[in-house]
Image 1 (tube, helix red, strand yellow):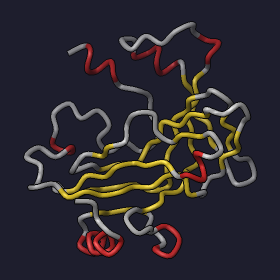
Image 2 (cartoon, rainbow, N blue to C red; image 1 turned 90 degrees about the vertical axis):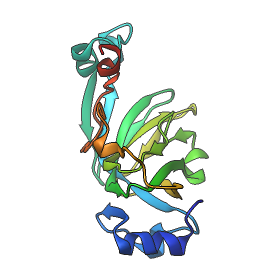
Image 3 (cartoon, rainbow, N blue to C red; image 1 turned 45 degrees about the horizontal axis):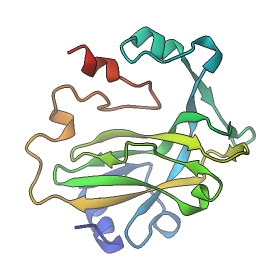
Image 4 (tube, rainbow, N blue to C red; image 1 turned 60 degrees about the horizontal axis):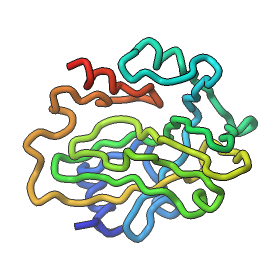
Length: 191
């Protein structure tokens, strides 16, 4: 069952959903979602360095990207057909019986910008920074400003608490992530 605005507030008050910094209910709470704001850090791909990405090459994946920090005075430009990793200002913690789904905002999508290419589910027991896999499907670059509302989270109740929540999952690659880090798919493939 998807939580309503009143149930989201109740879950936050009970500590079942923890969001830091604290959200502004007047501007960020919808009827069944919470809007998150864009952070300052972006991980971009240095296309000319390599003709392909090798998912088995941990060092290569790291060297293929670079961290960029935006500010209010110097927003981030997402170019046409670019994929970037970005962070939200908020950090999220979920109870063992809740999951969150990341959704795009129509106002951003109408500019050609998608906020997640595949990773939309935050498992029960998630703890860490929300990282976005952003792409610009449009033909024109778009300026992205830190602090702008960039995506929404909806929350669903599980039928019972997860037996193995994310923070207890062996091999959880992104537990406690603090920003837009590189893909860790090489950890799966090497096992």
